[in-house]
Length: 207
Ligand SMILES: Nc1ncnc2c1ncn2[C@@H]1O[C@H](COP(=O)(O)OP(=O)(O)O)[C@@H](O)[C@H]1O
Ligand SMILES: [Mg+2]
Image 1 (tube, rainbow, N blue to C red):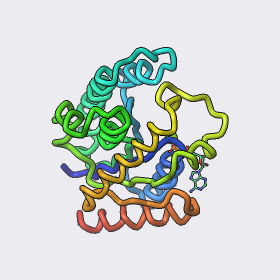
Image 2: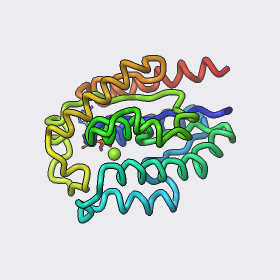
Image 3: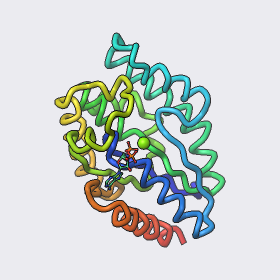
């Protein structure tokens, strides 16, 4: 695979969108080709699955249904968008990937890492080269998100998000080569510099 696959992880409000945009500005300046995409979603079918997943009316959704829909959305997105872009040598900036499922469905919904990794075997074969995990407490994230309209997952209680954060910590400690933990409470520009440094290191490795 010629391109570089980069994912951005952490709970809502941690700064993923902010940092993806700054990373994109940086790549543009360097005249490097990139695409920005997101999970769940990123292509027509996966965006339709996203609508079902995030619909605040779908409170009856079972944890396993949720996990399988995320996996289905991911497989489609990976095959239709991410892998072709990487084959063309592009840098893919992806807002969430498999780590989100492990943290939210594995830990938050208590389905366990094994179950999530099992149903995502195809995604496991194509993991990001580089992942940024923005560490942020559920309380801090709530403050940052302000009165923005919440979707089905965002309506969960604080215990759920504490488990999600614990999940992210476990995942990050297991995969230190790929995942870089960043203090999401730091200054936006300082965080962007860290992200750029890691991307630059990765680019130098490819040369
Ligand atoms: N490092 C930071 N310090 C303070 N505020 C931040 C920081 N990063 C992002 N924000 C603000 O927090 C809010 C949520 O950021 P956003 O990038 O949308 O998070 P996410 O995409 O992870 O939900 C936005 O208002 C953004 O401007
Ligand atoms: Mg966002």
